[in-house]
Each structure stands twice: as structure tokens, then as C-alpha cells.
Amino acid sequence: MSEGSPPSKQCLVAVTLDESSLGRGSPDQEHERAVAIYDLIERNQFALPDHNGGPYRAHLALVERRLVFEITQVDGSPVVTHHLSLTPFRRIVKDYEMVCESYYAAIRTATPAQIEAIDMGRRGLHDEAAGILVDRLASKVEIDFDTARRFFTLIYALHWKG
Image (cartoon, rainbow, N blue to C red; front, top):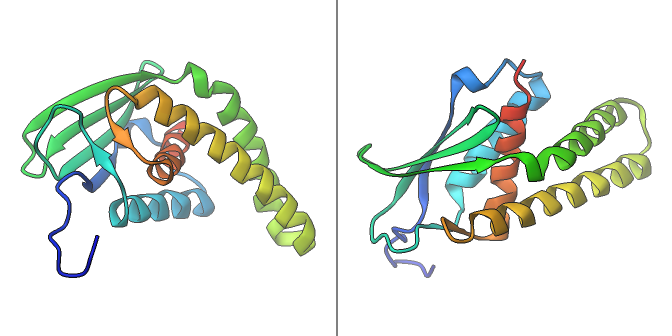
């Protein structure tokens, strides 16, 4: 986007997480959620095929082991709701949880080289999940890889239910 050009209507301007789907997270988890939402709103590519509206708001929830993407116009008028099975993410979420636990423990005691190695594994899983998310949403929502990475952080945040 060039300076002075109007912002794209094909984007998200707000993202919320369903409070009943969440539990209170650790300070690290709460921070990850806040940063992911901030980053997602600041920079995203989000378009709905065959819909000439936007910008959009997204509300994410877990309902019966499915991820619910509720998309509305800025004024709150409904646009579409997508239900996405989380089965393809089950292994990645499990592995990501183990790596994140190792990462947060390592930050306190490990050498920089050890922390970097764990973080590389964490980023690899994050990238794998983002790729799956892009594929699974392909006919429903057009998002770029970085937007998908941020969405995975929020999917994982919903998984943290206390």
C-alpha cells in the first residue's frame, strides 16, 4: 500500500476471542494472545471470495471441538460464519504445546544457543500449522501466510482453556 492511498477494505479491523472458550492463561500466554491480536489487526490480508464488503471483524470460538470463525461487517452486521474441524491441527497443537513449555522454561535457564534451537522448532510447527490453515480456509477466506500464522496463535490460545 502506498503512502496516501486509502486502506484496503479487504482486511480485519477487529478480532475477539470467545471468553467462554478461554481460560485464564499464564502471563506468557496472555502476552502471546495480546500480541497476536495486535499484530493481526495491524497487518493482515483477509478477503471473502464473492463478497464486496469489508473491512471485517472476526470473532473466534471453540464450539464442540470446532473452530468457529464469525465474520461481521464493522457495524456488526453478519457476513458469514465458518466452522472448521480442528482434527488436522491436533498433532501440531500437542507438539506446539510441548515445545512452548520447553521454550518458556529455557528462557529462564538455558543458553542462547539452546533457546534459539527450541525457538526454531517452535517456528517450524507454527509455519506447518499456518500452511494447513491457509489450505483449509482456501475456498472460504483468502489469507496470506503471515495472517495464518497469527490466526494459529489465537487457535492455540483457545486450546489453552484453563
